[in-house]
Image 1 (cartoon, one colour):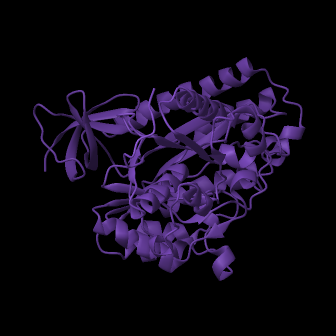
Image 2: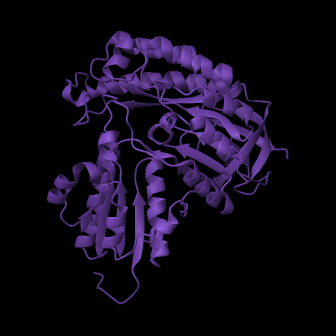
Image 3: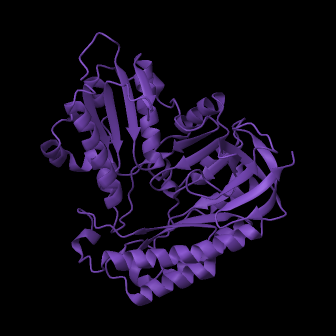
Amino acid sequence: MKTKTLKKDKINIITLGCSKNIVDSEVLYSQLKANNFVVEHESETDDANIVIINTCGFIDNAKEESINTIVRWAEAKEAGEIEKLYVTGCLSQRYKPDLEKEITEVDQYFGTTHLPQLLQALGADYKHELIGERVTTTPAHYAYLKISEGCDRPCSFCAIPIMRGKHVSKSFEQIEAEVKGLVKNGTKEILLIAQDSTFYGLDLYGERKLAELLRRISDIEGVEWIRLHYAYPSQFPLDALEVMAERDNICKYIDIPLQHVSDNMLKLMRRGITTKRTEELVQTIREKVPGIAIRTTLIAGHPGETEQDFKDLLEFVKRNRFDRLGIFTYSHEEGTYSGTLVDDLPQNVKEERAAMVMDLQQSISTEINKTRVGQVLKVLFDRKEGGYFIGRTEFDSPEVDNEVLVDASTNYVRLGDFANVLIESAEDFDLFGKVIS
């Protein structure tokens, strides 16, 4: 059992959930470093005496992972292996009273907007002069950049507005300063994220300003790739597509979670769009940005989803041949409109439907990848693993999309650098090639 010593506190930050949580942890990390704490993110040595868990509360699986992680470290505290345990993030924001009753070993729980209070509990000051600056926990050559917080959309199944609040955009100036700071520290790829990136600027400037934001970031010297995530389909700002098409350092890539396609489900989900308009939007994106890779996310098994609704979804995927696709099974979330509906589909049916979509997507991905054989693609290399240097094209985001592998025994690249790769073979979700320059 550890005993209290005069040794300096060491803090381990554990991040669960999405890229938006990663950014929050990086901001926390930077604040603690500025207060002269010894800090690590996802420490492998387990020698910290203070642990902070940044939780996710998005869907059942994420909530379960967060609770299991809290319990694990609560047991570690009870055994004397750590001295202090703090919990923050979405799960804590949403279920704080319940968590305080059930897992009492945690010293304090904090919500998503309580960074100053968390710092105060640690005996640290909130450094206002650090706004826009942060230590990245991703590889140095890419970084996530949150352009706004919260969401004003009324989607029936989503608890994010409950956990994150209303949409609040960062100013142009704040984002530009953050990008310049990242580039100064070696970042080459900026991954723009938000709960709804297409809503950007409406609250600050009275109209959507995503197109102007893309131009401003694109103009910053040293930014080699800009990647857009989490675009909302309803009332999509088409002028942003024009900027994407004209700027070489904006990736031909967009992540646009469509969730479903049948009119019945889109109405139940309160998505503010129809089947026809969804189809037209996908077509417009491809027409305005030739060669663009579209990533989407879908939901299987929302209350009221009929066999016909699901068939419509399958046909939609087959017809539109998305470059990248993920699917979740519906998770019943209290506090949402969908949470008041009868969750009428068994879990095994939801999982079967999700599997059918992914089987279809796997075949589509294989066919698309095979068309890349013989092409020379610009690749940004992220890591070395299992005898391969592994990187990504402009059509792929970290962690979730396809990768390019080159044999490390016959090729050499520096991690974090770009190289031109001749694609020699393809699998379902991977490309293989050799560096030519």
